[in-house]
Amino acid sequence: MSAEMKYEGLTEKAELIMAVRDYNNEKRRTWERGIDLIVSPAKSDDKILMRVITKSGAVGIGEVREMSEFLERNDYDKGLLFGERFTAAAREEMSQEDIEAVSEEIMPYLEPQRLCFTIRDYVDDLCKARCGRVPEKESDCKGCSKEHYSCKIRLISDNAAFHFERGWTQFLQKDLMRLLAIAKSISKQPLESSKG
Image (spheres, rainbow, N blue to C red):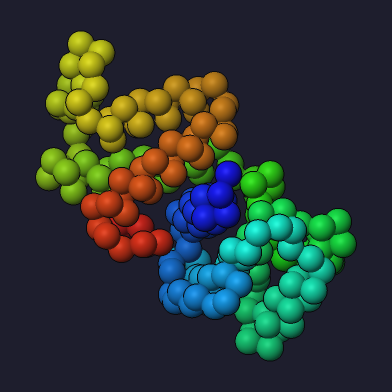
């Protein structure tokens, strides 16, 4: 897998976490080793740094300490560090500094119910954007007829319902990532949800 594809996967995870936790994207800053996203919860004044390291290889203890100092110096309430992978020392330092780690292998726990509610919100917003309204009942939606789907939003929505019934959290995350990609293609505004 190329470094750019790994980096895209990490930014997709950042978008997913932002959507599920209802973080508003306040600012985005690109620097030589990555991207900083300054976000805040919709119902709070907390300031959170989501740092995506785009360089290949393991994130080490030096980068964790640098982030910890940056968080303290700039009065952040919380930090999430995204990297391809982390050294054992970096993981230990992050647990001591209360910085969440996100990598190809590590993902914070996201409750299936919260994922499902977020998916429903995005489906509703995308239905409004595409068709002008949210269907009240299944038969109101013209995106599916005789088990043939003509609408990706409806297909993802139905898949998500099935995945939720089975308790398949990873599939719910992928369903939400697909909806986020559709929302991004409609809005052309990266890392922002269509929710108000």
